[in-house]
Amino acid sequence: MSEQSSPNSTGDFTLNYVQYADVIEAPSEAHEAVAISLLAAVLNEKVYLKNGPIKLSLDLWVLLLSGSGLGRNTLVSLTRPILDKAGLSDLIRADSWGSREAFYQNLADKPNGLFLWPEISVVLKTFKDAKFAGAKEWLTNRFDEWSIPDAIRYRQTGKKSDTPTIEFNQAPRINLLATSSYDWFVGSLEQQDSTGGFIPRWLIVRLDDPTKLVPIPQETDHKLIAPLAEQLRKASELEGEADLSNVQEMFITWYGETNLRFSKQPNKALAMPYFNRLRTNILKLAVVFEVSRSLSLKVSPEAMVRAIETASKIEQTIFELLPTGMSHEGFEVDKIASRIRGAGSNGLLRSELTKAFQSVDAKDRNERIRTLTEAALIHRFERATAGRPAEVLVHKDWLTEHKSQHPEDKEKF
Image (cartoon, rainbow, N blue to C red; front, side, top):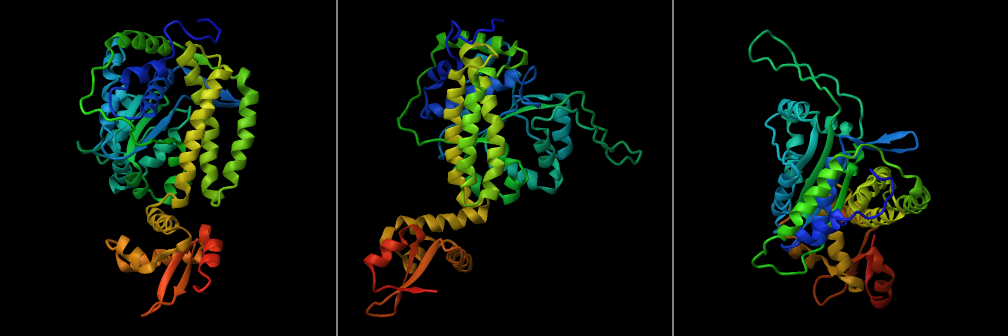
């Protein structure tokens, strides 16, 4: 394998894959994410990188947030001809588990691969089931972990129904590709998903709405299958440590600037766990982009630029999610705040907000308004009318303008 990180003769894998897969309405970022996941998964068992003394794997957990009707299952089905041609048809895992024991046994039997979760909110709900107690925490701890998991032993009664001990022969190298709608994802979260470290491990990409209409999808370009399969097969043969020496200064600059942006977030305690994972995930992305362009493990500035661009999109998504508190209740509160903010400096009549959220229980609705008021995110005003005084809700971003434009409104404290 040449040490030169120059483009390979068959072109860039991720760019070629986007060209191959762009036959449905999904935006190109979705196809790029699939290509990144494929490359990371074929590299993961034999390639690693180091950030100082810290050894990192190519574990990458990618989550795509989109609107409904994107055809998220179709995204992955497009990979099948390429994987079959490359002799890697067993790379993708679509396993489902009926119990915690089945989950552990599945990973003990087949510890490597790209696992598909077509709807992450369903998986999160499953992990909350008592039958899966501890499984999410166990999976979280496998991320970038090199030690072989301890054997899992269950109570033995001497009966045939006893669950056998589950033995692991190697450390699982797990890649995940999950999808969801924005509302379903945030609506299924609990804050401990973030503070416990599970969700911060993910590269969360919020996809734009499709900009093209494809009533009848075209056939993929079959001429691209063979070269894409060949690139993927060659990538699977790489092994050893990735060389990051040519991009260290770029990483140091990015690190300082990004740390500052995260530390300035209103909820710094919630934001920083996401920075702590993004700072290593960006290095993994740089390795993937280098393999994509050159089939080399010597990472070039060009690959690092692409990693920084991708990390910037992920950072933007994280900052959009943080106001929800990364919880279902926080998400519901944020929806009310967004509606009031959208009303601008005129504010929103309390009666109009009630109509907009009439499906919400009145007690819950009033409690969420109280939460926003106590946090000084919204302000309540009383406006004189011909009848009873009307209550006007104003977002903090419009407070100064509202007071100037509506001096007759009296703020309620």
